[in-house]
Length: 341
Image (cartoon, rainbow, N blue to C red):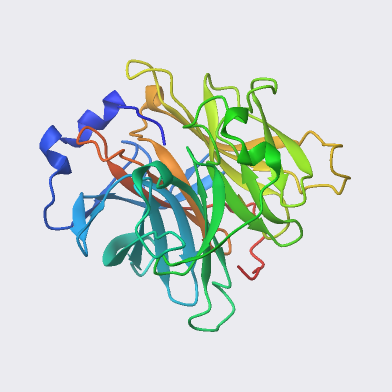
């Protein structure tokens, strides 16, 4: 989560009253005047963007969406908010395979071990990953959620029921090891070889700036170098079929300076003993700069749908000056083989 108000979002025609609950709408928009659905930009192909209006689903406010996960078995897109709410969304596609709409299905509060909705201090959900979402078995899907403020990774049912907390090494459990309580476990994914991987938004307190430690559950870690955009931060990552990660970075300095959103790809992780980290090689896939005509917002959520296709979503911070944008895109260079989620 990042409390920003990108000035370009004003171009969407939003006002401070936009956060009021109203009938849900998903409106197709273009992120750039000269680049639309079907067009290739750098190393991706854009397949549609929707602006989602703030509304309520089952009495829960649809806003502040910071993590995504795709359930192939249920054809559902899960989204979590940094207020501790899990939403079920169902995207719709046209005959070209472009994103044409989305339907709201359900909303559930994330609950604690006692079955109660999370208290605000414990509700800052940021990263989302999925298990058994592509095994052709109905009803066995499980979600992993990573949190800021009170850093932890928790297993949930798809209706927000607490199942267990994943073990974290002491370095990640201690809030004082992060530069800020709002810069903790922003990203989580499940790698078919290494299992659960987690990463903080910015470098840990005593680490060099610009280097993120991506941890496996057994304590081994790899060093991820952030991109060149000033104040860049790791906000999401998704394990790829052939190894490595597709990562999402947000670089925000101030509302009066360009917002930069970067999609980047790491090499496959090499094996190594815990405590002997390797510096990952990371390449840029696509860099979106609001100073170059891109209509952007606070993108924080990323998930692979199937093959080479992905969704990403922006966190409007439940703020009427910002917008929830759902983007569908393809990365042709990624191998399309399927991996169980």
